[in-house]
Image (cartoon, rainbow, N blue to C red; front, side):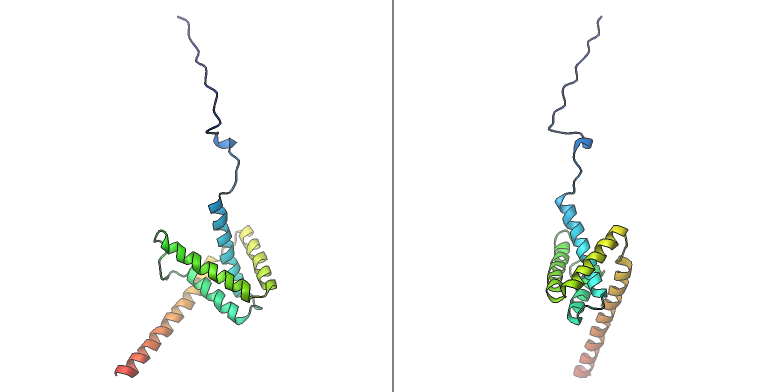
Amino acid sequence: MPQMQMETPARSNVFPRPEEIPRRKSRWKANTERLQREVVVVWFVLKNPGTPWYARIISACVAAYILSPVQLIPSFIPIIGLLDDFVVLSVGIWLIRVLTPGQIVKTARQRAELALRQGENIRPQAARITTIIVAVFWLLITVAAFFFIYRRYL
């Protein structure tokens, strides 16, 4: 009995092989990396000694909110939890760009690019500092509330 050979059908271009797909970043990944870079820029604006005090306060508040484990809306809530981080970061970056001299922002951007290329992780240091800031803030609120209640009711 003769053996029949089946021809393999020509591969269509509808579903190209993975190695044939050009490597490019998705829009989501590019935007995510841009936001991460902006957080690092905020951090370096905060650390720059030439930053005006009002821009430094805004940078500290943005960094504290983004990097703090205590948030108004927790990040694990699917959409709203990350949306509030995005809004705080966007408004904070806009204010920092408006209120901070251009040279300081440019220097912070360059430092952020260098830090991200070298793989520097600022998160442990930033988290430590923001945790201290948040803890001191809550301590001050607690002490103020105690004195208010003590004077008013006791």
